[in-house]
Length: 614
Image 1 (cartoon, rainbow, N blue to C red):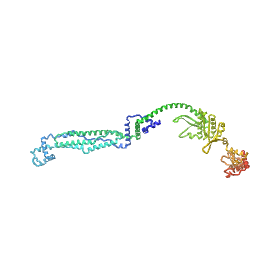
Image 2: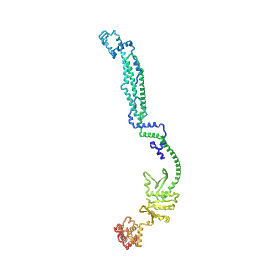
Image 3: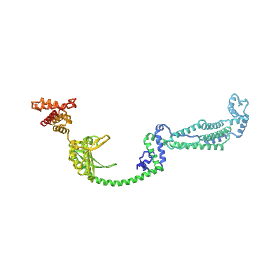
Image 4: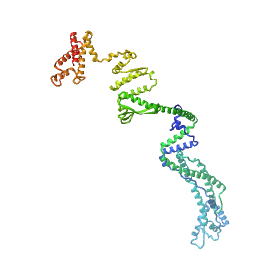
């Protein structure tokens, strides 16, 4: 399963562990969700800019009021006779360019020119105008109503120029550019309608419609009294322009409609957690990757193996139930056996609360140590524990008890070879005898037992109790290259150094051996010291020399605290002085001091006699 799990790319799994990743369900809407998650993450990253960035502003372009234009073009003066109008216009046409303006400006001057006379006179020639028909026609033609008519036509033209000229087109193009810039900023954070509008085409139709309307008004201004209407060409150009108006209106409405959503984006950007958004996006991307063909096949293989594992675990559960039933019987038995051995080893503690434990490595057990009715845990963060409560000897004793208990429960023990390696390491002295007894008891129940130790004091008594016919004592000696096994003379190592010296001196007294003279002489002083340690332990403890001891004896001579009498003091001093001749710390030439056989024999006998007397 680990191999199959590792085959699923970590990059595809994203934040998911293998099991959770394989359990993901397919989502047909995953792509839009990923896009939305990306936008929200981008918005959260740019929250400061979003807070300051405005939304879309409304924009529009002006229309032409065809009805109003038709009304202006249709204006005339019905009170002026057409014949008079025709005559005036015919006369004006003779005057050439600006003739009408010239006459119109001159008509008010008639009243001023006639102010001093009895009749009206022409302001240009001074002749009377009473019999002039053309003057009467001028009066109707250039009346205030007529001037108002021309003023209305002129105002309409000015209104069209103001509404559709100057900066109006530039302002529209700027509003579109602003909308495009706003769109470019917000498109990463929200789904927006596309800005696809041809401002150049609108500008062309706009200019064409405006010029057509102005041409119509100019024609009307040239013939104010002639009733007119917009030409079909002007109407067609306005219709083409109105398509651009509608296009701009619809785009403006669409952009304005998303402003509420932009406010939501602002609020979310301020409140969203970047880490959470990244995690959400990573999960969506992983969910999409889960159903990639290659990854899906890898997940299927893993899930199949997991199903097989579940079946195996069912068998394991059944086996564990059988094991638990066995442990319910075996653990109490082991606890009793271990505690029995602890009693035999004179341990001051016992095992308690032995319980079975399951872990990944198999079946195990937990327990505590009971000391003075107190339960001490094996490990503890603070307070009493196995380490700070049991000595090294206690721990070694517990290990031995475990070992012997396991042997006790071995049904094939009689065919086993048991190796016990240095059982006395860190053991207290009072447990040595019990350990030897358990080893001897075990030796009769196994096929073979091998005991290894560095302690001669432990091994020698064990050898004494062993069956010589079925036992072998071997020691490991250093050799030139490595080591070698040789037969060990246990008896020789069983004799103490004092016993060896005593035997050496006694042997010399029976048979003088020149080769051993210096060795016998050197043994006299240590033998005296050993005598005194046993005879006077209070006054001659380890480390004290014979000289100071003699000084103490002389001080107490004849008192209630007398140690030696005067004769013994003299004898001990004599023996000491002779022994010092052959001791390195009292005679630098001890190795070359002359030895006389008779003298040595005398002092050797006196040392042994002094020891008996002491």
